[in-house]
Length: 426
Length: 154
Ligand SMILES: Cc1cc2nc3c(=O)[nH]c(=O)nc-3n(C[C@H](O)[C@H](O)[C@H](O)COP(=O)(O)O)c2cc1C
Ligand code: SF4
Ligand code: FES
Image 1 (cartoon, rainbow over the protein chains, first blue to last red):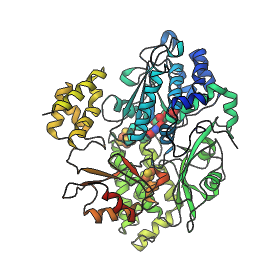
Image 2 (cartoon, helix red, strand yellow):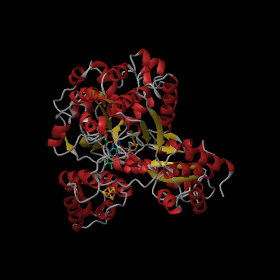
Image 3 (cartoon, chains in turn red, blue):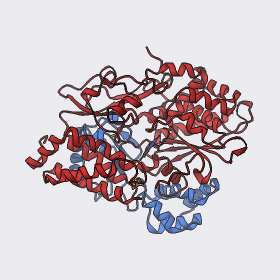
Image 4 (cartoon, rainbow over the protein chains, first blue to last red):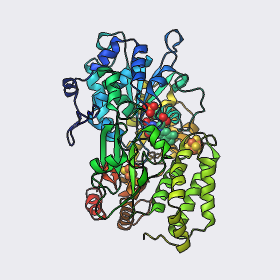
């Protein structure tokens, strides 16, 4: 059995791990060790552990922290913002961590905050995560009463306040600069970079944005050391375990903590129990809606950052969505593109105008009114928007990822819809 | 325009913020909790209470999915129409709900009981297809179960 530090204390169907139970299982040991080290030494430990951000972009966490001006250059207040927006379709991993083991997240927040010498931390949760919000609220109260939050934590000179913010709902709140605008009480439009948030973020102050899962790794890295953490991974691309998920027509959809770099097929067969009777797997989106499709021939590749990229996609959030042979690929694509069109923040024209055009085109094809020229319209959007640079943020390129794959892998299916003027699956 | 409780809650929000505008989203939620939705008069009243521009409040109110600028029913059904649900039966659920309630997305039943809205992935894809009614998540849904679930909401 492999180790699964992030989910070891979670029992399905039970109440969240209490402070008492968390402490009994060795909780807050990582924080004690961190507080005994200098902030720079904590950063170094995490850099050596090769922890990479679990929010989708995979940026090395220690390196991200190191950009925050420190020492005599430090400009207080410094903020840590926890990204718990989790609106990427197909993604359900942060919810598990939030609802089941809130102190693990708080300990991760404390370690990250200490490493960048943050004065205040904001937990940003999507508005629909009511249970997670209740659970975090309770845990913050528990931790504050026990001296893990507030002034002079565990007898050290370090202090941190944690605040919970629940979103009013928009996918762009997950994009890190959109998130900062949302916290400031504005529309969640992105900001131009540079300046990067580490230098000028929330209210113009140095700010780090970290994903929930990313932070939940920190207690274990600090408690057990970077070498142990590196050893958890099967990949040379990064350390640790990853929360992988599968949804779609599989026998046992869910989320599992596995060594980074297990193959997609292992996850699909051993964890998700294979396909439901009468369904065959045609393709998967490996890490949420904004990743390109992988075909059966790709499924033996390790699910790490570089291998999935070589196969033309991205690890993204690590939560796979299966397209089976009984689902219409055009219908699936339509759902994806409707989502992106609806969630476009409207800040830049190619995305605001282009994504609805793509969605309307797919709607027509799916309804049996498509024309052969429509393929060109779709190809044109991919050519214009897939590479970053034409739009302000990564939403539009993300939207093009599955569209690009579908235009290659499922082109015949699209053509059939147009030729027959109907959906062959209905 | 705001009642005593709303005003108290908004003053309390203001007390916690260094920048008044940071309280806008939560102030909108306060009013929505009390009234179900946020009218133009309420937008102006919130702006007044926070000491910010009404245009600023309106720009936020019209941006976010969970702030309603029109009246809604006593219960709001958020039906996930994202990808995992789309491949596991969303269309059948939607058709059933629309027929049963006699409304389409964005509509409210004439008796004011339900409003039906599409929502982005609820993070419950392991229980797809899924929906949320008010604050409660319902997963692994089949059309047959829907009527029974709806009966629990008066
Ligand atoms: C449109 C969009 C939505 C995003 N949504 C999320 C999200 O819900 N949660 C998240 O952690 N990261 C999300 N990201 C990625 C963040 O911008 C950012 O990279 C991440 O929070 C950084 O944390 P990490 O380094 O710990 O991964 C999103 C990015 C984009 C472009
Ligand atoms: S790419 Fe889309 S979501 Fe991103 S800023 Fe432009 S309009 Fe907004
Ligand atoms: S796609 Fe419907 S809950 Fe995730």
